[in-house]
Length: 294
Image (cartoon, rainbow, N blue to C red; front, side):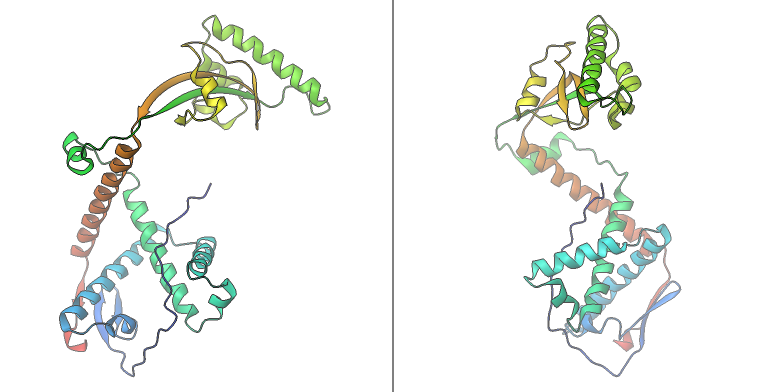
């Protein structure tokens, strides 16, 4: 499944700027930034310091876009189209209206730039696993109380077909049920559920012994799994992928408020990590700014 990208964009329908000058205002490694390319930003600044700050932001963007190309993680057409649809929806207009806007090419450019930076941050931080100390949690999450919720992990053996395709549906079902009953008896006598899942399950989870992700105990099926005793095999049940048996593997209790707070802390630490990476990238780059051209 393709991961979605949250796109913090807004639409400005009346962008207008014009200038006859087009000077080079900065060199960034082997490329340059012209006054024309950032005119829409500089026109909003009222002081020299603001212009320098905006130019530095564009230098950072230029460095990041170069790394996006280096890593080969440019936004694809589907991601760009999805972002355009989201942009139109956020502004309560049709996608056809957006495409007919005189500044549509600029919107596409901004979308590609934004998506590129987001993807680069995701790429750089994908293996970053911040550790949370008790002090981090106490300082940021406080002691607010909320209701704990239960989650469990199960392992499943799911079988969709045993007989050949010429068999009737009822014949196929009966054969699968008999097979799962046989497996269940062996497991109840001490055979390894994990080994049987890797050998017999026809679901993609077979590779890790049929183990599921953490599941909230909030449906009749999950409640049935939760009621299983240690080592007990479930009754045979039907799934979208076939017929199955399962065992309860693990359980835990979570405080939703604390978990949400922890994720916020991790996001902050991840962003700090990325900004430090960006600083080191900039420190190693060749940058020359022509302040007299601003």
